[in-house]
Image (cartoon, rainbow, N blue to C red):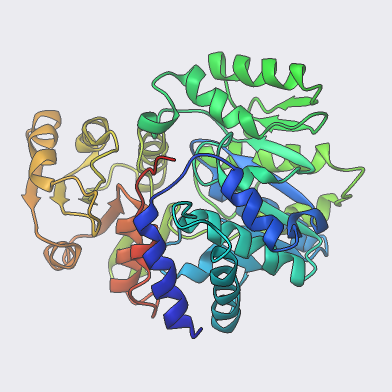
Length: 418
């Protein structure tokens, strides 16, 4: 397949939604020769901070001289972001070849046993990392953990960054239920590293004890003057990454200097990413749930020192947009509400009354698109684009930070039933 044909084929798999269960992924991996058995993994789950922690671990181990695979989702702009080695995106030719081979494997399945996009891409990533002989793979869960397609691997360490409310429709309505799903990545006698707290930590601890998995609890963010990512929450993520490196010191020794170099050089877009254009500062942050927005608000207070802020906000309907609006509105001098380029978007007209109640003095405009919002904000000093990684990905395109077009639709998903 050409790259364009591969993207078109993967897009067609969205018809089958997102599945919760491992049987199909296990079968796909078997047909591919079980490439996961040739690799070493650090498996990362958690409500917030998964991607940042993965990026930190990748950067640290790469600084230590290892050849490191990185598997994450969703992508911001290009599908190729999901599968990287030493922070180089998988090539278009390799995507075309591996998708073509995956299509052949899918022909082995009965007509009524459909593999989903994420299951297929997960096995494609395994094949690629094994072919390229990665020393280590940093392996991010897609959703939850216990029934996530990534959970077919046995890692060197299981990392659960934290447990907060998100995806309640699929993971549960209490922190304990959500923690149980995320604790599903814990394997017998494999060390567990987490910054979870309270009842969620109790669930993780009970699971770790039952499986004889050594538990390492990170309590506070460490002072890492070299950390390139901004915000107190990133220091906690860094502490989780360092705790993981320390827990694996005998299997994967890393010097303090490599840790420092890794943290200083880590790059993870859309996490308080600051772009300066003439007299304007634009902040891109993909926070999309209450805990993520709380972290963003804390960082904004620390970084902007009460300067007037213009927010461009767009959210998905299945997120807690009411709570997000209530958190951000008191910080806003202007609020531009826009739809997200997704069939799951929350209508900005629904967000406006909540913002108005939370801050009656702020200027609120409902606009038809992100492009229109950028025009409306062109004279504002500090503009914050947030509420959805989908929205931030679109912003990166509009700001000329990427030349890729038409691949963000691969982030669309809905639950499938089997």
